[in-house]
Image (cartoon, rainbow, N blue to C red; front, side, top):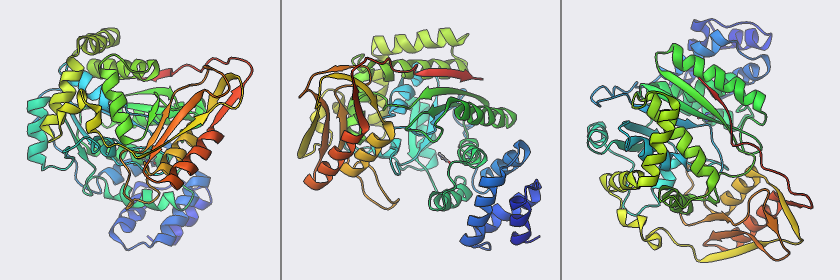
Length: 434
Ligand code: URA
């Protein structure tokens, strides 16, 4: 077997065997296949595509390239939740405590933000003292005692994906169904939970721009999850405009706390209750999905979800006083406002551009090794469909560097379109795939 023959076979539309896929993936991970050959291979997959059997084989090889977590020491059905990446998506911070307060153990491995999308680990680190690294014994103890633990991604989980994803990022080969599926599912299958709920984003701020593409991705991931022995479901949700109003790490933690107090924006509250309800059902704590949603809503209304969030923060070394005192979160020194130049209605707020604006403030990173400004980001005072008058503040932009905030303000200006006619925002939850 050699790499050139495999590249040529895929380039010419051939179907690869499991052994050929394993040869490429493991050769690259271990260093015997160089970047240029793997880049050519990825591009050949991008154009010639893989069929379902090849995608399944690719996912399994990537899963087995590192450790597969054993969470059997945690009692109950462990349910993991994964979002394919969005702007302002802080649902994990809300959904995890809601589901855990209803008895579903959450043992979660999360990533950092890259490019225009944020990451749960960065968000949690904006809470003073919060630790995302711990030994596997501590991790299991925290889940058994508190019901939730969130740790950062380790190099031992699906190392093949870590290396291949970095290469895809710089070779224009991210947006391919098989490559996205295998990347996400290899990590989820290795992370050890019994059930997986996927939030597949669709729209301008997502990898999948159309509902059709998002459904194809969701169906393939659900099928691979289920055939690998994990109960898997997916929710297709809108990412045409940012979720909620806050974008940026500390700002998003603050908004998540508001949601858990019952004071958050409608869209993120609705999505969080739905996702938590599905997780409660998948975790065997409700007799059907509708019952799960009711339990999630009750956990929110009663404040049990908020109390669980406080336990979780304290359990991982963070200061739970942030719940009542937002001034404990990182504070920025520069604030600028984007105002409406005309009367009308907010027609659209491009999620990807807002994500890029947030990155310009310093809230996101351009390269993996960059630091992030945990206080920086944007707050949307208006969302699509809202009426505005000239001079009204549409969004506030925060940071600690005037030039960066100015650049972000300009990008935010490009993201917002004002029109004369009120347009209703699209449905938030488009479909559930089981
Ligand atoms: N998220 C991932 O982890 N991998 C992809 O390929 C796309 C989104």
